[in-house]
Length: 503
Ligand code: GLN
Image (cartoon, rainbow, N blue to C red; front, side, top):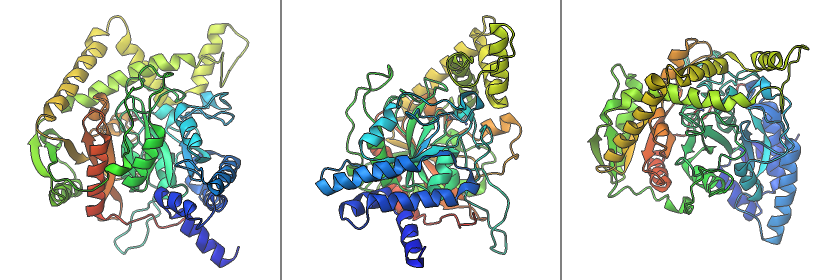
């Protein structure tokens, strides 16, 4: 390859999704060139283990179709944009595993609604992104296909890059790593209790979980159906708005899909927060909060004031019960959803020649990883006859109280501003105790239980050069308000850091 070509390819993978869209229309480059540049970046980044399967043919075919459509002047909004797809989305003819051995080799004969919408808008797929098994985890360590390595490395006091491996967050860790490493400008993620927002925060990118019901769950492998939501992960807020727009919309195939119009979210991005009341939930000021996280939060509050907002103190009194309630409700739903993996219909089958029951047991014992088994056992326990009232019913009541806390907060504010996670990225093995891992979800879980739109925006670097994110939570269906507050924060933060290439 000529040095000029190499530079051009890097320049193409550095573009935001909006810049790709506009450059393609201006014929500054072709969709085929764009796809090739990204395919090369994906191949060069294999040490990150971000993809479970690469699908260069899919990306090239979509690019050819996009170039033809662009020439005819009738290209869709995402024509020629190559994306990464989390391996939780069923993709027709392409292996879909949810990060688990139990689905290894499963090739869906159908397409999820969200990916079908993205492809209909002209996007191509570079591959299926690695993830925590069944989306259970916060670090990608539970993937059956090896952990994803963050493209970020901390800086040592002398400024040199440390060679200590960091996690990309989870469960959408393949998505966050791929977007941060410039393997794709955008990726799909899913968020049940923080799986879009926390990995976005860990890798210095933006991600939004829309209101529950905005994006169809049809064809998305189920974890906890009353919480699961799809959403985009991109390098900036504008790209989140563009991608979310293409992913959203009513779907009669999902009984919980919202029949609400999809506004033009990109048009809502003014960065003007005059008249907006930004709430600060006092219960999120945890004792012993990391001083760098507290400083970022204070900076965020100053930034929204500069953009014209007023800052108000609010109380969400049941916050401390959110994490325990989530870790009852989510495993309960998971235990029921995962009953379908029995070795009969799809995926792995371990048959040692015994009875049908023996086949079920052997298949599930071999196919599920330890975290998934832990969740199934917790879920089965909290739903069992003797314990249902003490755990599951109680957790459902707490969920209602948490939703009411937010509803009351909306009387005095329009959006809430909090940190996304209590720490920067950690290293694999640092949180070997499952409870320590669960605690990382403390700021993301309450809005999930309430079904609210929430996003993470890159806001600051730690002293060792690792990204931190701010979370904006909004009213039901007010993605426009969330995105616009995120846009104002992004502008003020001026976050321009990117991982230095070591792979
Ligand atoms: N980390 C949380 C969990 O393990 C959230 C995961 C998610 O949002 N999918 O359940």
